[in-house]
Image (cartoon, rainbow, N blue to C red):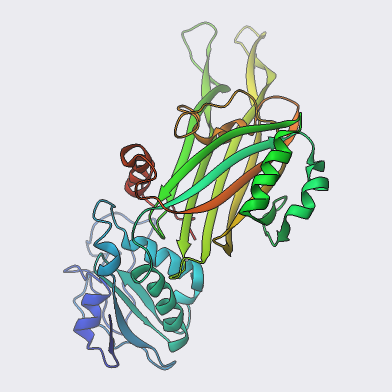
Length: 399
């Protein structure tokens, strides 16, 4: 349900936009607020402190570009996601993915705001058309959990494309070193059989991911790696220097956000993956001076880190399978775990794609939409990652 208000009063706009004007901190219309000097003292004392003034009502909304106010009902979508914290945030996220963020912070003036029941938008007709399309996919699309199959693989030689090329077609990918392919589900089965016949093929993990339409699910495994970064003077001790340690968080973080069309024929998926791995700690000797004119030799370490980043959006028919080749990276090691989520301590095995070894392999990620998840998986085990993702604050890099 959409309600359009061509003329919006100042008080109504202030309330709907969620603007809270604290008492004593308003801005006088037409006059910039006083800003405390960085070199001045704190407080509002006379002589350069913050001067708070009571102002009049806020100005009327600009409408020179034909902007107008419209509300969109989110209750048909959010009422089915009572167990998820802030499900309406996904609607805003997908609007920003479609429109970009700059259009909301430049001319013409506009804003977007949402709560669990209502989406509020003030912008031009062209922007409202985009918002309506996204809104339609949420409120008239499926609200039951959806099932996606994820398979992580590694191949020692990228020449697997020679035989597999006839089974798939290439699609554009913007991330450096990443190649994307589409294939039918029948060809995907033939592809897996072909790959399993190779001696350099290794299947790291195969999992089923359950996620509500439009929501994000984050899978991560991080661990701290400590090392000696420097030495600080420590008088009265021997040696008279104290080592200071640094820490690097290594492992992976994978975030997936799928959105189906209303007819469930197309899948939009945003994939964001960060992998950081310490390959080695390079030792370096330091000559630290002593009071007797001699020196004390201390050793520090300089980390050698391998990092890989993927943040991209893909759109493909729901009856096909998406295959992502992440390029030749450090070879995965270890044996796969057959638990529900792949690896109890190393979820999906992605943290093993970058290792300390010298070998390299082509890392592959296969994603397949499998339909409604109702009755197909154990709810308690499958919903745990989604609940953790919903409770986790959304990152600023989600767009």
